[in-house]
Image (cartoon, rainbow over all chains, first blue to last red; front, side, top):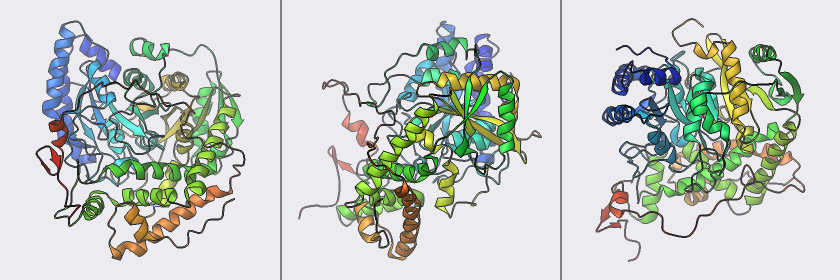
Length: 488
Length: 98
């Protein structure tokens, strides 16, 4: 049985349903390929052969009983930030390099219930802090389009694995761009849903008011399919949104619906000031215009304040969330501690990498006595202004079109020594995170054989709007079907 | 606009608050990096936020609370499997009280 590489989730699902191959066949083919080619990119921290084959066996049994979902028996990978019972969950850190989660994240449980097969856990920036995947304790990930370049981050392993054809789907998480930026740099489709759409339970916390899980796949169609199984209310997450969106359930079986009318698409002018490679986004705009969509320039006046605001809020929340790593209950513990304070300080110093420590110190500083109002409260106020900018724009337009990143993939070590230059990678993704809005990165062209992504941003809980427009765009273009190794 | 003096970051104090043992040899370097980050962050001080309420939840929603009833049981043994040192169901740490 030959499993063609770069097959979509939908096509695999149809082939499984038609009995062209079993899930065990499909899973074996994926595992063989991953074991053979993972060293090219270092996308996986854990390859879970035994676990996957057990799940595949069960999926085949479910199907034989006539009890299959569109995802039953399909191999996927989880970012190593999701707790998985029975598999290592490292979060890309030495601190958790030997951590076996005692329970599953809700995302993992939901996808398991749909019958997916987890073939492994993907590499990531340590505790999801980074935009290049260079901060991982398990080594950097290479971009499949050019192995001297980074895949982006923090969901760099997931993006590279999908781009390289190792899996058709991997989960990711996005705090300030960690799904969208690597999706853009690797030429895959990645969705950060509305804050609260997908449960954060069992997803190792970085910045709780921003963290959101989402799917990374090779098309909007597959992204919609994954979203419909990942999303849903979870009483275990106090910020989970309790909603019933008909379209969300319908997508699983009926696919992304066709748009029945043209929309008004906003172009936030602040995102196009001095934009390199603007011609790529303009070409995508021209393609979308063929469907009758109208374009309108809008202004998001507080865009420039988003990066400083984000680094105050995200670092403050990170310093609080990461206080749980104390060397006592789980995680790395130093040798021969002389006192409790020494145990805490040395365990944390040895267990955390440089970027994580930098953010803990930044957060500790801005939360400390005398600075709290000037930094944390000030940033929360600007957060409201940024959210208001988007609300105002959505009074005039149905969605926004913007670049995902300022540049295509950059070289390993290019920004590693300059944290502030690295932080600028998130220029176009951070504002949406602060406002909690859904945003999708879609491949829309190439520069020097490197993929470029465009970002579609929707109003809260209107992932359907951006998925419909992306699906329409992908019907007419083949950027998302290009693979590394082919000439672009 | 608020005037903030961050010219003298006390890295020893911050590291202690953050429970991080940063080697003395790295103090100067770490202080410099932090000063650069704080300088970048300070760009936001020029935004006028008069009369604006802070936003803590991105969608301004209320946090949900569940009923205060036991819904899951915790297995001490399972949770302690990941602990670096335990004895008789307790977590072991260096002596705190002499």
